[in-house]
Image 1 (cartoon, helix red, strand yellow):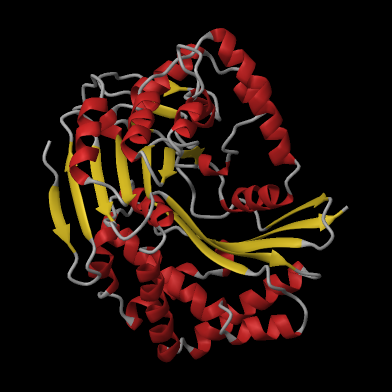
Image 2: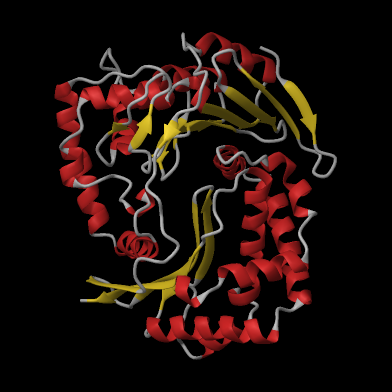
Length: 429
């Protein structure tokens, strides 16, 4: 296997990348000036993927909600009864894993014995072992995790908000599933999902940091097990999502001292991938900063009136088939904040955006991108997440330089509509 080398004339970074005969695509960004290295081994499989058609089959498969997260937990079980974390610890590796809406990833960082830790990562992720006994045992563990999420105000705030925006899309479902759904998970279901989504042609390996390219490639070649790549894509099946939001407002009472809020807008300009999706992300992130960032007039007014505090934050979450902008924080009067935000959008719609604000926010975006290269874990994580949306984070500048003020004005008019806005609140008991 030969990796091709690319170098950015803008950032000076170098990347080595290629596709193994198994279908696994590999991306390595060497940073010899760093003391550590980080590897993330991910699959395009998350909590939204409960309905799909396996390549070579014609009938849809439906599995219980929460199975992607469940499978992630079970990957740490080894046939010989050994503990994967002990193997990493032996060579100074700090390992972890996570499941999100659209991906599952296994990762580690280390300052020494990188190749040994990489061997361990490749081995256990390709060694599924499930029995009905161990699957049933895990139900109690994950059940406790679900109850913990149910008691988390921040978690409930977020999912109540998502359930305001979405009518049918499975992004509205809890990542870990429910007590009922996980009770229906079996070893057969786990193997079905593993053999589908953990096919190496559906996975990627990203390595960033102080790593010897040649040694890493040898470990990868030796560590990849027999795996026939799919010759056609996995068909993921999602219900049709209407453009309207499900509801305007959600409220729940929990043990908090100050009311918490999350408000935002549903993104209906979907079914984009690659450069088009990245451009939309940049436009909306810039707009959020211009309209509601800490340098905005609205932020100052809300802060001076003690309606928000330092917990105030902005975000745009995206995938090819869904997306939403959000503002969250604490407030003594969340409804007043919501109304003020909507009124500010109405004002800007009449008076127009400020081009100087656009130029400043655009420069901040570029600065954030450059700084991201200094965080090897954050850079690798962002790289693989964007890769799964067909976005080349290494060539970020090619998209960034096309941004114009006219684009951002058009995006503002398309996205920030009152009929797509919703508010979620957690009030004290």
